[in-house]
Length: 469
Image (cartoon, rainbow, N blue to C red; front, side, top):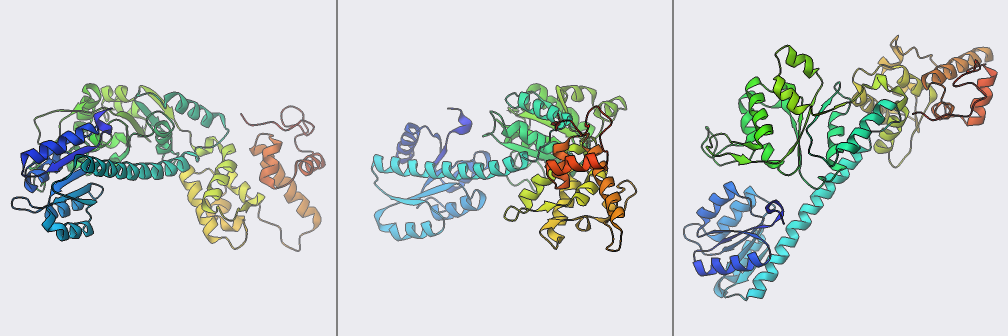
């Protein structure tokens, strides 16, 4: 078993024989063992190691076991702590349990009793970790389901994800803001063999310039004013898994060179330390800029660009894959209104299809969320959408007819609407029918009536419906 996945155990007692016995028991369970003779020594170990299971004597020199318990729970709430006590101090041990101790053990203890308690503490640690992982996994899977669409451009992205998910190859994801670059990074991680390992997302544009190095690589106690204890960096947190560096082009040149060294040497040096630490992480970087143009202009290191750009994944803007809009809308509606399925009118869908979406999928999601919140009926109509979508010249959406309009005017509007939808989906009658909210037979009848798609070739009225690539 890798050391990264073994329970870390700490015994705190001023009697060497008790420490030695507890460590032998813990080692027989496969734990990684640490020992401390006092609360102060234990707290120093907490700065460099993160034990998941601690057993401490109630009576310690200077600070008591209860004081140590409070410090541990304050710094590492998920660490399980058991208190050892003599028969005359059981009341104090029970009080310690009220403060968060897992259990108390009376001295002298039987080996099997200690073994059973350690097993139960370790099982609780594993169950809590598994619960948190499953919660994160469910959220991740929900997010991943929003990488949807049948357009050739997005299918190319999904094929690359499938090929990269089980490798440690560095990946560079490019695309405009709002296209879903982080979703692609999460898909590469959570759909593959490393799904149970850490995934750490870093927004490089939000890091404070003077603190970037300490955030990424960690720091030692006393490295700078306010560094009261050592702290691991985000690369160490991601050890064994994936680190996602979003907007990597925002890193200063100095940090770019240090990042390059980490990628080449697979080791880092925390701020204030003279010792390098080995790290094993898969790096996925992303940028909404043309990094090749940036390195040619001297704004990004050329060697770092080629180190990151082993495999490139380009996420297309939404305006280049508008045929995916209906499936994206349905995905957002299912998530935002799971208990009351909502329909969307043909006029509203037409407005969504005509708009250019400068904010890409993120803007579409915000638009649908707004419509769900503001709707007055059991469906979403054009009036529920932001006015920019149907008042913009680019949208060219025809407003609904007034009650006084003649039937010929209604027919004219119907023909225009069907024509625009039919052209938008490139003759896909199945998708056109879904968008218009009419049956296939009705669609065929209206196509024939209005002489739409009757010029032969793809999309002719007499052809069977085709599927998008």
